[in-house]
Amino acid sequence: MSIKALKGFKDILPDEVGLWQFIEQTARNIFHRYGFEEIKVPILEKTELFVRTIGESTDIVEKEMYTFSDRNGSSITMRPEGTASVIRAYIENGLHVRGATQRLYTVGPMFRHERPQKGRLRQFHQMSVEVLGSNSPVIDTEVMAMAWQVLQEIGLQASLEINSLGCAACRPSFRQALEEFLQERILNLCDDCQRRSTTNPLRVLDCKSEHCQAQYGSAPSIIDHLCGACSEHFTEVRQTLNLLEVPYAVNAKMVRGLDYYTRTTFELITTELGAQGAIGAGGRYDGLVRQLGGPEVPGIGFAMGMERLVMLLRQADRGETHPVLDLFLVTLGEKAHDKGFSLLQMLRAGGLRVMMDHEGRSMKNQLKQADKQNARFALILGENELLKREAPLKDMSSGGQELVELAPALEDWAAVIKSNIMSREK
RNA sequence: GUGAGCGUAGCUCAGCUGGUGGUAGCACCGGGUUGUGGCCUCGGCGGUCGUGGGUUCAAGUCCCAUCGCUCACCCCA
Image 1 (cartoon, rainbow, N blue to C red):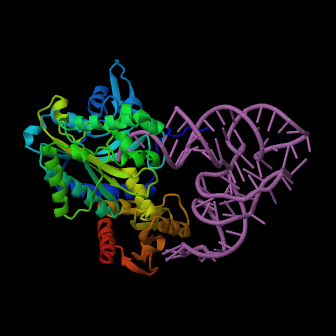
Image 2: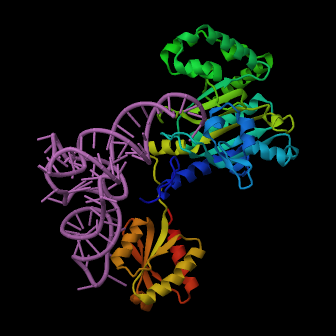
Image 3: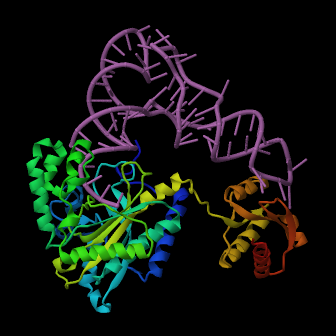
């Protein structure tokens, strides 16, 4: 049996890479328009970083991290998400002195040891965005509007759901009210909710059981428990979203899986991906920088799942993008091949995408190759052409061809061929 | 971690109540014009039927185990 990739680890084949590049380029372009700068951070970090930020009792930390001992015995972890590393880098490099607010994004693989299913892998890729240093609710809106715009520009539909989780001042009172509510009817809840009511009470609210949901209609809502400042913040977020005419819905039952979130949280949700509806999600994390030993700096961020975006585009049949060759050099005979090889390099240096055959295949075959590689033109170069000093340039889509002169010097050939091709650029 | 479904060619799949693995489609390679691709046509390559046991005269087909994949739960991008 040959060696196969690890469970949950996938090859991204050339057919699909064009789509990945399209998404990433579109997103980067938008991020730059919004004043964001890229930061590249390591894939490995000290385990402690994730334990302290994501939260000790979260599923990610408890059972999903790729954690192991380094050769000198320290515990290191392959990052399960991007925010923690960016915050660490922000603090470690004193980025707060570069300006009051920093807008950063990073792109790359994340690792979680989960059971793979549709839209969920053990190595997956995120584009992750962070704003550090602003308390303004308008920043929340700006960030959501930017995420929204990314989807718009890559041509995807999703709905935006928002919520507020409150802050260290108001969340505990809500949590207490909820716990009391759950205790009163603990025996009427499903097994999962009974478990969740002690481990992670907020989670019960998005239970899928109808029986449970019927009872949660009267459950305390986080929105009602927000303190004055948090309530005002949330109101302003909604107002500015309205102002920008970004469509959204408030979902008071939305919960996030990472402990560091405060105040505004949001998800971009699609119904087209089976059980994995979130294609982007994020929120505020006002205490996080301080908690990691940095200055008292608020933050907000979100991540988008590349695999899920790619999957949606494929489903929408916006699939494979084939690389296009400007020219395929068809050569006949050894002499023409050698001459052609020099010409090939000259043309490439001149910026054209050019290929040729080195296997001595028949002309028919070489044209077949040209076709398969989506060449726009084919230049036919044989002994006759070398003697006559002119060669047919064939337009592969129309089939028509005309002779181009072969100047005495190779440089001039290349220039003539290039200008011939360029002039027919449509 | 739990549950369900599925493993036959590189890919998509036929293969009935067990009776010799398909001229199958796509892809790949080569012919059909001795210097012109796509379409057509002909031919070729390609499989320890996931693996290991068992039942049987006989197993791709039935049984058990195991591995893998997929989807769902949990949870999450």
